[in-house]
Length: 243
Length: 309
Image (tube, rainbow over all chains, first blue to last red; front, side, top):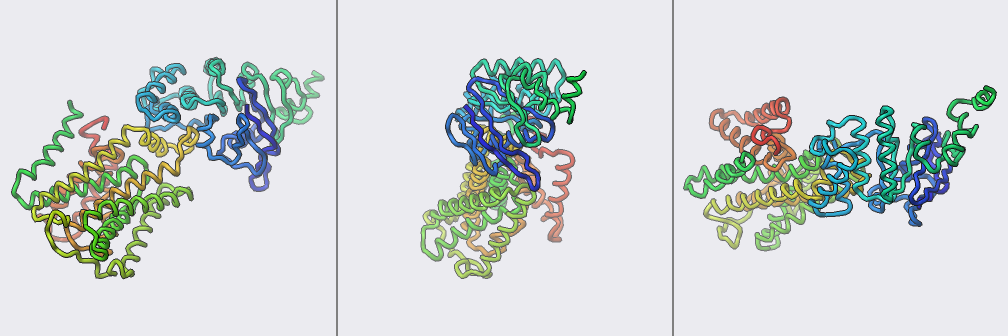
């Protein structure tokens, strides 16, 4: 469904992303992981149109989207959330979600009804009429997902939705992401929380220092010496193997 | 009940001058209505859209000059000044907005750009032949309904109310519809709005165009009632400031705010003028009132009368 080829971006002297190739199959949950500074967020920003790549291509269902503005990509069905949550702070939770719904309908009544339905489904029912600024961190993460879902995306890009949550909140979001996939939305997620990746992803890509160093099922990834070294430092895999 | 009380009171207040033969009352009401309409036009961009302009006199002046030039130089019927001014003001709003927003200018940078445009227009109007330069344009006195000049001032007042109704209708449309929802989302967080499919530059440019068109119509009403225009009147910084002051004192981003703001500002202006002869006292008082409002009632006066306005 999503085909990313040879995506590259340099910031000054730093090659943030160096030739990323990535595929997301329809109906799958795919994860992009890697240590801090690996280039995950830049990759995401390029896929969603927020950062222009120096070279490479992004295709959604065969349509070349490289260089499109974010709003055009969103309208085409690929919608992202933000790691640092970006609520419309002065608006209510329902109004926040309604903005997503307005991408697919001009009618206020319909957009409002859909926003409330999506919000309730994502566990924000009690918060719908309160200002978005009153939400907890976990609530804001839910709001990010709810707003994106209200646009009825084909592909949802989740940027570290688990970051900053406690273990029980993480379990709730994991269940939520599964439910979203069950409703037919394909998901690409960036994640730091390995527990979540292991539980959710069908396929994972590992990025380190801008390069793809491994890919496979979460189980294969977790056993890959290159991945262990990228996370824990040079020689770590050998030390672990030697006990 | 309480929600309906304020619009109702304002409605009665607006109709009062029609029943009166007092020239003073009608003149005061006309000035207040025009100020409220201009404040509302500013509010559409500055309040609902967060596009804080310091140079809305640019649109007022362009509209006024469009109307004055078309009738004095080209002999067009003055009524045609209305659509012409709206078109000029709208186009200017869109162009200024598009170029500033495309360049990513926001907040105080955008405010300075609008200020610069108003000043540039003033300098241009001072030096061009078609605007009559510094000596301005005099519209011949010829009261007749077909000539957009009225012997009965109450007709001018009715037109001012009509413009106010138009601007307030536009604000109400923003407060309730899809475009307004997208605009307010852009005001709160541009990146998040883009991620949800909102074309940010287009939304903001269209808003400034709407605001500019309404402001330009105010310029036409000015020309038709005073029959004289010069660059200082058309593009004065005081006009820009008064527009934003009225919206902010009353409550920026609300439908009723500019109406309340205009009433309060005119009450202050006329009271001080009758009590103190020294010029410049009223603007100083505006400043004090604005400081008090920002400090004590950041949402504006409208917060007192309607908690959810």
